[in-house]
Amino acid sequence: MLTVVAFIVALALLIAVHEYGHYRVAVACGVKVLRFSIGFGHTLFSWKPRRQHPGQDTEFVIAAFPLGGYVKMLDEREAPVAPEERHRAFNTQPLRSRTAIVAAGPIANLLLAVVLYTAVNWIGVEEPVAKLARPVAASLAEQAGLRGGEHVARAGFDGELEPVQSFEDLRWRITRGALDGRDLTIEVAGEGGGTAREIVLPLSRIAAKDADAQMFRKIGVVAPLTRPEIGEVVAGGAAERAGLRNGDLVRAVGPTAIVDGQQLREVIRASIDDGQPRTQVWQVERGGQQERIEVTPEVREEGGSKFGRVGAYVGSPPEMVTVRQGVVDGVWRGVVRTWEVSALTVRMMGKMLIGEASIKNLSGPLTIADYAGKSASLGFTQYLVFLALISVSLGVLNLMPLPVLDGGHLMYYLWEGLTGRSVSDAWMERLQRGGVALLLVMMSIAIFNDVTRLFG
Image 1: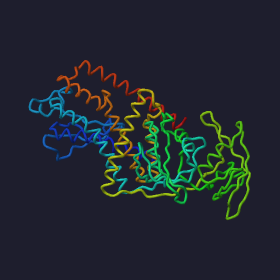
Image 2: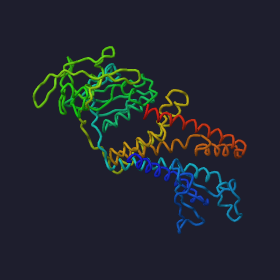
Image 3: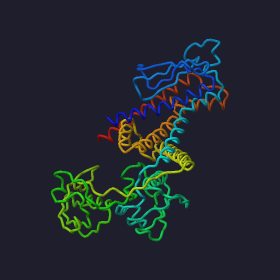
Image 4: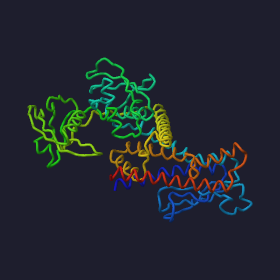
């Protein structure tokens, strides 16, 4: 139920803001708006405010199909217009006014993202401290000299290092670097505040196409530092059969000393020989006493690869920090994050077009609904972060030069501005059909990715 409610609230807010951008600028330009609709199809609820802007008689509508909305304006191309109202028709407006009205929707979404990121910066959010778990074996992080337990103080590209506020902040920078093919320099201190040193993560070497778990495993920075503690034990699982209990602190597995939860998870995954589980002796601290327990993991298979599982939550919760900004700093960081997410989205779309990034990065309504529910379950600030991310995506997507989107209309206006004449009706119809076809293909791929990701 939470997923459904969070998804509907997200859709309603983002669509309303997008369409309000069109509506407000249209009114400011003197264009008569006939209808403001959230959703398509059968009208569920409609009303006309008694007090409206001069010359306006707008009907506000909530319709049955929620995946979209529209602002219907007076336009001679759609219906006859009385001579006395011709100056209020959209098609009679100067080029600059039409451009501003069309661009206002995506811009409103980007401005909403700035507001949401700013609100999160002001409210503050609990995130893991930027302390690194032991890196994945043979990963870029291990090859670069990381061993686990380091605290990342600063990070940046091209030698410009900036403070790292949390593990999520570091993860975001790693994502940007991997997808952009840029090496990331990090400044770390060892456990106990040892001497700071700079390490370069050569992210340009991995040629990442997907921002997924496999990408982070190649890099080696998968999770923040946690205690190698056994949490909830699954009934009937390998951990329960071996005698492991909630709260056990694992000190060693066989000859391997264990220092953090991520390392323990990796050791468990690797405890398979020729597809068969390998029994190992675990050294466990329980109630101040040392115990030795034989553990035989269960074998799981995913993507053609076999790995071990013990049927227990592995690793204690990480050390947390409240990330909060001041008034001015919060606004600036909101603007910067919106710009960074927008730029990364545009680059990823470009890479997908030329085959340098996988089309698996396209997500549809099922994935969005899933993330809406998950973020809402994590708290109000996490839900705001989700809304900001989707708002950026909606704004950038609508600026794409597809004829059925706002960006397509802006391309028409660019042609008109350069040539002095508008696109002909015949070409307009061809381009609209092509745009609809391409959009349907994109939606089909996104929904297929959703189904594969959630149920495959």
